[in-house]
Image (tube, one colour):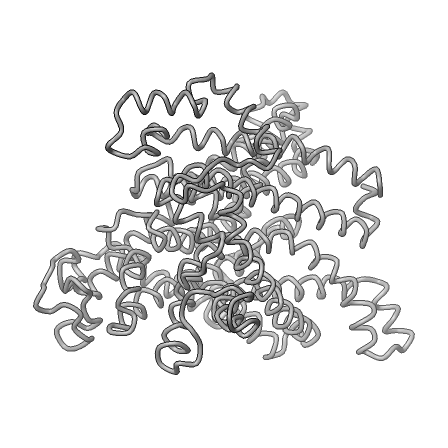
Length: 282
Length: 315
């Protein structure tokens, strides 16, 4: 079945279609943030601090009088950067490790044992330990969450490559004199693209939750960056006085993660049945 | 079965060693001199040098690792910089809260997760199935701390029914009624994990339903409920039992956040606070203890899996 057909609003996947609409909306917010945001997300207005949602500030303001709506819009940008960054880091490293390990058995013994060791750490704990070594920054947050998901990606790709390695078309390629590089990247990798896409969608979703948790614990993005996680973290003290500070960024995170999971689920249903059991979403 | 168990334990030992080496290296990569941190700003260079010698920090790294590991195996995890107490006792102080929290959370996960998953699978494709699987995915999309803060806002601040933070020991005044302090945290922690179990129970029941022995059971005229229980559910539980390994990992990760939201004096919050305080001996000790617990849990789960499903250990 064509993957795109899954998002047809008239097919059974109406929720996945709505998810795609929501993600497009977030993408537009992220790209056009300076045009859409009514205020500078960093501009402080002490007179207006903790104003309720109203005419001038649709989503209210925070403890520094910064406009919540503008910060939410710029937050979409951060969500996109973190999500895409994590996907790129973990898929690149994970596929390389997984594919090479499955293809070169001896190397695999070493590499996959290293992955096993990293997987002995619960995800957030590994991220926390790595963050103690690094400064709080956007790049480091991406690297740390990326490493966490490199382990699962490597595991999954290892299994898939093992399956493909014994297929006739790979044997044919080897017999016709194709080199290792050619076999791996021209014959095996193209068969892994659609499962990788599914994996990417789940990593994108999980990365949002992990990044928000790191922000909340004070070990994620630098506090001055308007991310949804940081906004929630700051709102914690004002929960009773200014509940809107908790509602808006929270809804944005939940809807985005939920949408991404729905899309991932729809994509998974469309892929090669051989790999269906290998990829686990939420 | 015994051979399988022994093989699994032998694989565990090198992984544990490597994990402890990794934790050790992590902590030593952190910039800054632990002796200087320990003594504070007023220390003279001579004091720092003396403490460095006393702590064995001037020895080569591999000697330090062997010494540290040796001490660790004897139950000596070092001394906390912040508490000025043995790391093991600092961890033990948080253990009661964390264990009770985990037990209560598991209770909710089983109470909600398993029945909803079963109903979802037996009514496959119906609106009940759609609502519960959609709801489960939604629940798994909620950041734990957000849910926690919201529950506090509703049940503690607005309604005033439950305490919002802290946990007095059940041996203190109040006894078992003190468990009400853990009600909101355990529900918060259970939500995403129950969601996972719902989806898992549902998926594995659907898998088993397609198998031949279930068709035979139906064909010979067994009552649908008996088929669902004796033939499908019991087989599906095997896959669910296997999931408890990674539920443990998820619990630990999310307990770190949940204990912070509800200011619970548990091991999870200890990790975060030790990181923020740069209390390296505690970070090192707690992480290693958690990793060991996690790996032992996984081992037990795997052994139970092999016992429940003999096909696994024969592979």
